Image 1 (cartoon, rainbow, N blue to C red):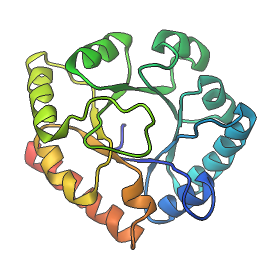
Image 2 (image 1 turned 30 degrees about the horizontal axis):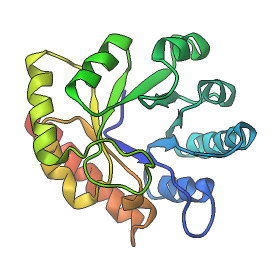
Image 3 (image 1 turned 120 degrees about the vertical axis):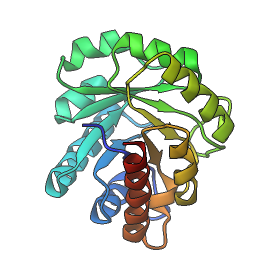
Image 4 (image 1 turned 90 degrees about the horizontal axis):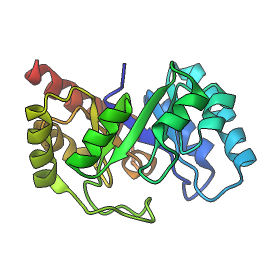
Amino acid sequence: MIDRLHYISQHPENGTHITAIKAALDAGAKWIQLRVKAQPKQDILQYALSALDLCNEHGAKLIVNDHPEIALKAGAYGLHLGLEDMPVEQARAIVGKDMVIGGTANTFEHIKQRVSEGVDYIGLGPYRFTKTKQKLSPILGIDGYGDIIKRVKLAAIQTPIIAIGGIEQNDISAIIKTGLYGVAVSGAITYAVNPAQTIQLMYQQLNNASLKED
């Protein structure tokens, strides 16, 4: 089961990725993506092992960004691959058939590519400008999401699609109305004044939208 709310880790002003992950878990996050860039793989593995312990304590799922070998060694629930990362087929050969694999997309063509690759979910974005990405793809916005999801429905694509990129709590209802499955957020939780309340409100918006769809 793919959660509708994904938290993507970032280095907070005070602390580490693990500090941010623990705070998100304590606040109620259930799907954590460890996204560490430009650090040695051994350090990222240690982050992953620490993050997995925290996720297990909170009944949450850990997804590792970019690194299939680290996801496998750490015993993560899943792996997320960007468009310029290792091909899904190659990563699948490393992590095995049971690990969840998500893939990034920016266009409908990317979505078709990801579906053909057999990913379990797709991260579609960016919604707006975000400082967490160095190489930012063209911004989609609500209109971009709406156009792409119309084509997704016409193509009868069932793979869950998650909005990503600069998303705040107040954006969620409008995003989900386009037909997207869920959202991925980072700073909206990391820098929230009250992370627990923010996550609660996010889940309420996501669940209310899913009930209306049903």
